[in-house]
Length: 144
Image 1 (tube, rainbow, N blue to C red):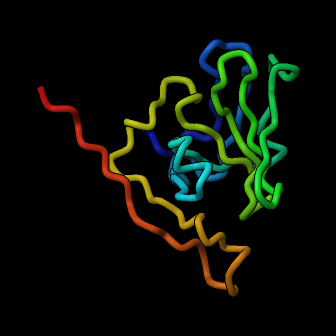
Image 2: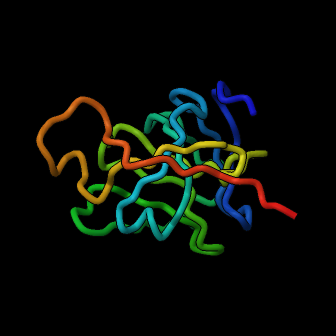
């Protein structure tokens, strides 16, 4: 897997929502979050600046979900229900993009994915340098 990819196409499961995205640091920003919503969603996300995602089809099918502080903006396809991207609460100038929606990629392509602390969100605690990593998710290949 080339973690240094910079631009890639993506789509939801049914293909209604399609996009192109330029990633801020390739796949090196891959992470999960342990907040209540992300725990249930289970996606691996990578980062892109707000101006660096272009919805090329299906803009009208995108649905917005917000909760709690309503600062993060989670987008998903209203047809198939797949989460495509979200405007980050911890960095509102960026989107987190669902790796599973990126062409030719799967969250299972990563050996280790850091899990960011989201239950006590960075904006809810005293200033610290960088994100708090709550742990790492290790993928183990399925045995026969």
